[in-house]
Structures are given as structure tokens and as C-alpha cells.
Amino acid sequence: MIIGIVAVFVLGPQRLPYYASQLARLVTSLRNMANGAKERMREEMGPDFDEIDWKKLDPRQYDPRRIIREALIDDQPAPVVKAPSPHLPMESAYDQRQRLLREGKPAPFDAEAT
Image (cartoon, rainbow, N blue to C red; front, side):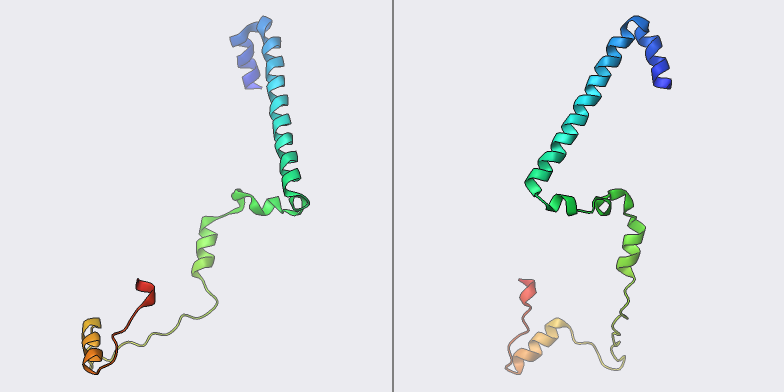
């Protein structure tokens, strides 16, 4: 309503009907383009187009806080990691490799590291 009042003052009463008809043509052409795109999608996708749940794909329904909360909260308990004994020194990866080589065993190989 405010836009209409501003348009009356800016355009004047003589030019307002012409610009209103131009706006109506623009809205009609945009609606026809959207309907044409929808029909083309329906033709290309076939019967699957009608089966799609479009509300499920609406980005407004996604709450990042909920997604993160669900990702972090897991129903399965976290595996218990046993702490190394304070009386035994931890063997570094280099020391472990050297020990295995001295014992004649192959060095550990990580297939995912290469």
C-alpha cells in the first residue's frame, strides 16, 4: 500500500496506469516462466517428480544447532580408552619401529597414510 502511494506521487496520475500495466505484464511473464520450468522438470523427471517431498527439501527447516546436537549426541557409549600405566614408559613410534626391525619383523605399515 505504501509503495502504491509513493508510486502515485513519483509517477503522477497520468503515467501510473501505464506502469501498472507494465508491472502486471512482468508478473504474468514471471509466472509463465516458473510454470514452464515446473512443466519441463516434470517432463524430464517423469513420474518421480510428483513423488518428491518438497517440504523435506526446504532449507528453512534446517536448524544448525539441532543438526550439530544430533551429530554429537550418539546413542552408543564412547569406547573406553585405557590410560597407559604411569610405571611403564610409553614407546614412541620410532622406538617401536626400531624394536620391530631388531626383532626381524617388518616395520608397521599404514595403508591409509599413503
